[in-house]
Image (tube, one colour):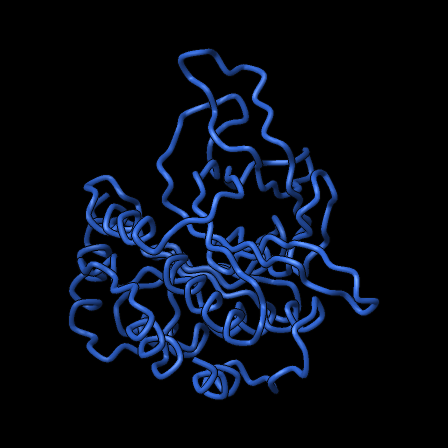
Length: 294
């Protein structure tokens, strides 16, 4: 609802733009990712994330929390739609962390957005891939929906490419028409595969349940927080390890020793305050104990 827009823009400390164009879209994306940390605290502490829009707004806009893809992209979709953009939700298959010749077919466990017919300053329209919820590889600007057109964002260069896996065999086909790629010093690496078919809320509700409850889901086992900064760096907390990175370079690094230090870090660096600290403290103590006895 448009009545929700003032609270959202106040939260991201931006004025409501005058018109829905690509300049406004990129301003919103930049402020969104610098306000709402990517974080999986709820899943990590044993909960199934509530991805209903009222729950997301209560958690992220009214509360001092971030979220992961099914929350932060859903919130952005609602905002952009209310503001006048034409937005489709998409489902993607994660390839991040796989070797280039590894063609394992992962489930559709990621949510992204396609923002359609966005005008530029000259009135020419273009579709864009938008994603504010992929952790350390989140693209921090809108990506033109054009194959093999590198887009420089404040936090790295990305592109959409046609999915070509020359090692695919008839019984092990890679799935998806497109692949989102991030540029590394040694070349492009795949983030996820996707196609332009719109996804429905039920698709993401099922995927959310899967990542929150599947025994081997890394969202259940690893604490993950990422917050991009205006200077092109990212703040990253992975379990006990906190670091500040620019691209592939680690600028600062330290390891957390206890829950008090972790909670202070969440508040000071990621802008996160937990309404109930007890589950986090218990989970962090167990994490610290395993690290100590490893």
